[in-house]
Length: 176
Length: 453
View 1 (spheres, helix red, strand yellow):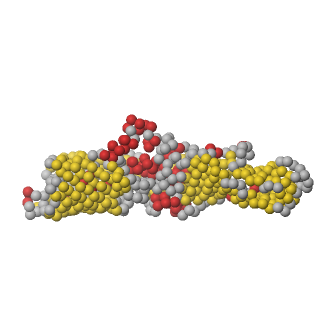
View 2 (tube, helix red, strand yellow):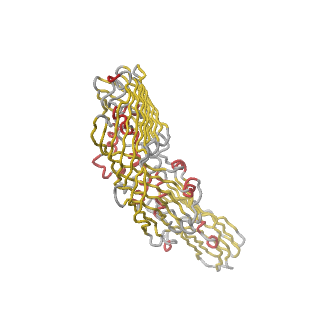
């Protein structure tokens, strides 16, 4: 691993103080079943969560680098096929699996009230976090959560399809 | 981790193709102003051309100084920015410092701040982007791609550490010490493609640099002769004539080592970033078990001086091949199971041969009258040829100079300068472009020196 890091860093050294930027297609680390979640929740449930978390990788050797900024973008499509309620779509990042869903989500978007037959596009505002130590690591966990609240009545059924999840991590790159 | 990575980066950058053209380094501002041409008969002339032993050691140019003293203006600027009493905490020299920049440190090493840098070479500052996915790892180095060598790169030189002895009637008997090393690296096409063509890294793939390095040192009892074979029209009162020189060396190699093989890493199974790449090392190491590798070689040289014209040609270490009767061959490889470098002896005692590269220098100078002198030289000190051509015009106390050179990287460099003489003291200034920094652009150095007449 150090060999890979060294090879990268040797070349980056030639770039003077140019930044190192990771453009991470987080979605690609999720399986098909991870990125499409069907749900069927009893009516009248004030809050229930459907979650998935997966590990993804960054190039090794940058764990001690200082993160300048992290920009996260995501998009998801939600289709309600039965019942009614609302769904909140949250995206988390963490260094450990155990702490993925703690804290404030990096991205969040709410569907608003839904009834059977509705299809909505969830486009959480792009988040920008500065000097975020969560990303000072070679391996990260991403957590996707659909927080569902159903109205009294028939089961709320539907499907959440994650369409895009990208990270842009800019390092301060004080190594060079 | 940080120190280790920085150390590796430093080591490899030192060996990068953007290495200094050290053979051109000088403390003489006049030489800078003439594009690197030296008009003196000491230094390189005697080192590479044994015939110069018979030529009087003086400058070609009438009225030229006896010697020069550098005025290190660059050091003043350097120590102003890097106070000497704080060097221990200076980020430039402290890899642990967050502000440490190996590229900046190497630029100082490649280009010692003796003289003032009028224009510093900008280091490429483009961002480096990694595109990362489950089965994707692409590195976009941007403009920095141009720094990746297309062919082999490395370092190499042959040095004569001492040359002591006695001379009688043109004959010289003595002992010469030698040190030769040559390290060559070649990027494997897979690694090169990954770094330059924005192609993704593949799982279960070797990425490596082929390495071939040899170092040897020893001493050589030497018998040489240098003399004036023909005298010119000026007779003994002038240096005119045809000079020849030759030296026969019996080399005693003290020790040598040669390492050859690939070094790099092997990516794991998909996803490519999902597992740690394993170090890849699989090479052979040849070392001399006992000293006294033996061989014979020689130097030859000629010089012709006719009035204002002088030309010389010398070559060293012709036919110098050393035979090492006791060589051990070991194989080194990285065992991915134990995560250790394992070595095994392939052959405990065998014979091997090494060569000293032929080095040479050709030089010429012409005093054209009216204070104009034109000179040039072609020098190969073991790795790459350097060409210098320069001219000096003296008018009364004034001198103006200009020149061009082609450095070891085959880049053209330019020199310009002037001088002013006050009695027995003169002040010279030379401006010289160079590509000694980690940059694709040239820098300009202003050299200053005081000449003593």
